[in-house]
Amino acid sequence: MAEVNQEGVIVEDINRYTVKRLKRFLNEHCQIVSGSALELRQRAFGVLRLEIPSETTLKNADRQAQVAREIGKYKTPLDETLPKPDTLDGWNDDVTKIPDFSERELYNCLVLNNIRTFDKALCGAVRQLKAKTFYQDNHVHSVCYHNVSNQCSHAYVRCLVIPSLPILDTNKQPDYRVCQKQGESCNQIAFLLYSLINITEEKRAGETSATSLGCKWNTPRPRKLSPKKAEEMKLHKYSSSLETSAYKEYCPSGEGSPLQREKF
Image (cartoon, rainbow, N blue to C red; front, top):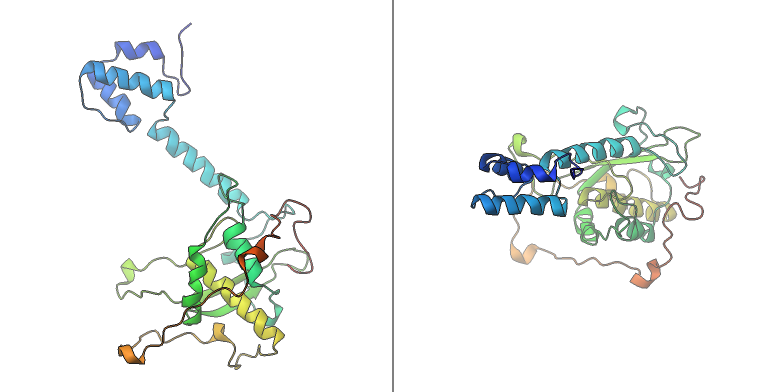
């Protein structure tokens, strides 16, 4: 019985392939197509032996993974299906309704979170912790909250972020519409998380009024900055107030109690 690989290629047919067919086969599998007929045939056998998928197979797998990701992206650990944020109306700018968020939870979300798309490794988004510098420079403003529904265990929080490198050409401006789920992180998400920490601190200090000096999320920096002299610049270095050992208590969702309904 003829041996057939996972893509339906009969192994014995490789010996009957012409040079043109061998090159097309190798090109479909992103391999080198130069060399003699013997080298091409040996390379083709190596592709089958190593089970290297073709470019078409990889694209189909990526497409299926993307579809599965879109289906599960708005699923909560309690198997609730959330609506997309863009479809919701009635966003509330009353930040006092946002649940408390601590620096420990930020570290858990960006660094120790192991709910990734394709594996269970830690996210390890340590670089995103440096986004605190941009947050302190007032790149975040217009924080809003939406509780989805009274029965839902989750809520949405959104904000506007001023790009750190503004570009006059609108055609070359990046898309800053970012929706974050567990296992995903970027600087814009870190900006928002740091604003939640600041909101929590100001709520506890009783300074959540929109006119309060402590409301950093409501005072964006000027869009056009004038240059400063070196002696006028004040450089700041921000560091975490908690020790790394203090974050060892992280329990990934799915183990034990995944959520606290009264908090989310």
